[in-house]
Image (tube, rainbow, N blue to C red; front, side, top):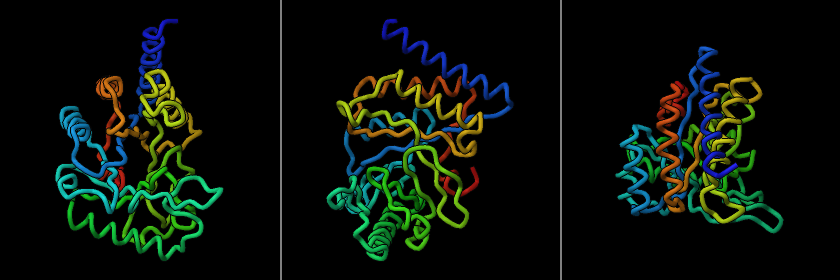
Length: 255
């Protein structure tokens, strides 16, 4: 099968899944997060322009100590992408800003400082949510995030369950970048397979049906295919009666 035909069949699979949601009398909900922002760039400007034109609010996960004030002023929604995005992993650990060898108190203090900075510079555009670098946060810190003034957490992969008394966890499930290959667009077929898989799992109850399906982008690495995919994704999902949620609403607990 030619590449174009494979892509078309993937879009057809998405349309069929959205039809299945409608037939069940349900609305599939999605949201959008973009990582690694630190400064205004042409790629970021293109991302924000796409967000405005398509009417889909993107949560800009910006690096706490590095994000320039001009960036925080431009974005409609900002969340915290760690404090400094520095790999502190010990030998044998996977990359993480929050290693096992760092005390909870030290990590929480760093997060408090970053949260105060964003609240001061971004005001109401800042949603107090942590998207940890490399999507890793040791579990002991999760229930203590509220001590740092953070009410939400966003990582990658279907969440296990909503946490009573802890932060609101809403993850992403479709990463557009092939990190283990060439750090370029994964391609339509792979991205759509991830999307359809999570939507189907929610519909069938094998994943938390209340967790919106999250699209994860990295604007600095996007090529023409990535941008074209995003715009078509917004069109196709809207045509299929899906709803794109405001991240501020998701992490308020009202979604």
